Image (cartoon, one colour):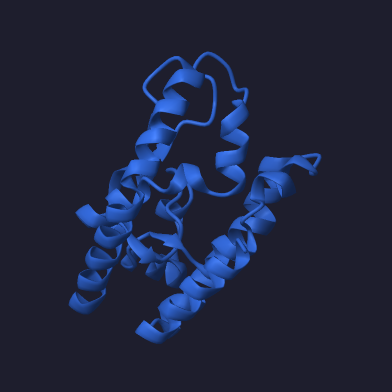
Amino acid sequence: MKTKRILDFLFSFIILLFITWFLIICLIITSIETKSFGMFFQKRIGQFGKPFMIYKLKTMHSNSEKITFFGSFFRKYKIDELPQFFNVLIGNMSIVGPRPDIEGYYDKLVGEDRKILELKPGITSLASIKYRNEDEILEKQDYPLEYNDTIIFPDKVKMNLEYYNHQSFLVDIKIIVQTIKSYL
């Protein structure tokens, strides 16, 4: 899949050329709001189950679990995830692929489901489009963790396996277009 890596690199490089100024402004805003460095780093599970550090803009106050004023806006429009184009540029993520999760999910898959780990995690996927409002869905549940573990996560695994089995350049383009449409 060298072609996919080349396209990921070129696409993320071009995107970053256009949005770096915007990211710097957002970083300044999040740094002021959180009274700390406005970038968030978290270990996620990557290709072949190897952990990597994902980049995001901070959306929560450092000393509490409270979402900042701009943080809620950044989350709603996924602006907090734009630094992940740097993850794509350096090669530990792709534009299209399963969203990277924290330890205890993808790394615990068994059998056929483990094929997902052969894919580079992505900025977007059909599962991320379907569950783009996942936080809101979970807030409505009496037992959000249980709902995630028994309903949402298994559905994401199913969708990501479907992508694994049918991945192609054309499928990636369709997913990118669907992602853009979902925010318009």
